[in-house]
Length: 280
Image (cartoon, rainbow, N blue to C red; front, side):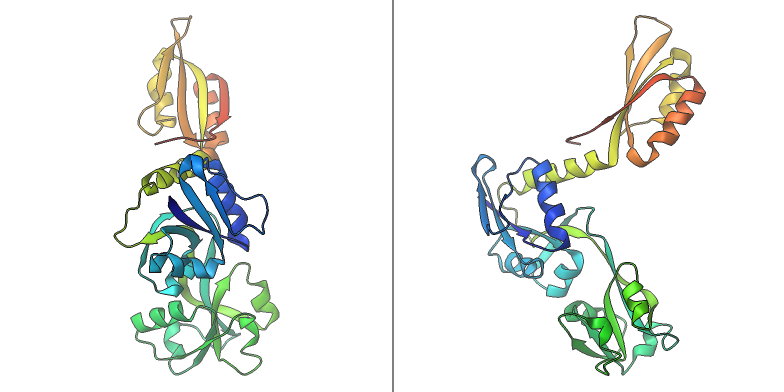
């Protein structure tokens, strides 16, 4: 069986399980379950701490896993990113007391607090910055006020917590993170290609809708320019020989704009349908 690690709690857990369910896999109903077998798909799921998943995959104990890109890179294991999954977005950045720092070069010789010491050390080494890294398990933003560090490197969402602590973001982002599927380098266990294909199908289904509309024959080329689809739109004859029916996949975030443009062009009976699953 393909052995897959899934986050057991935290911000990634619910979204990861939902995506696997949409991909046709069974998922646990009780959060106390640590292992779940899906015999129909020949796959076994292990529910683990997100921070530990990269370690299990990198050691070869498990075949693949879903975790954050930041956690994966911080673990510095023998594994690789196989597929970005489009949820759990976050940004890893530097922050310091207001007005104290403007760029990374000013961190030379300073103390930096973080929960991602592996990731931070690699970033500083790449840029030739010699700074002391102080690893903390949480509440990193309090470290400067308590005299443990001069600045911090942490995951930033709204920045409100930093402002409350009298701090501000500076410098370019260290990393833009999201949930990713990771696997051991060079390994291709049986069933992995199916898992990736199914996850890709969910990603496409979430980004696109099906658009159907009727339009006069002489306007098809102009309409197709608005709805080119992935390869080409489907054009079908109607009983009225002057009209055709067109079906195409369009980006869901552009749907209403495209519908307006099609209507202005002369299209009618414009319908939108969601896509639950697909293979591209």
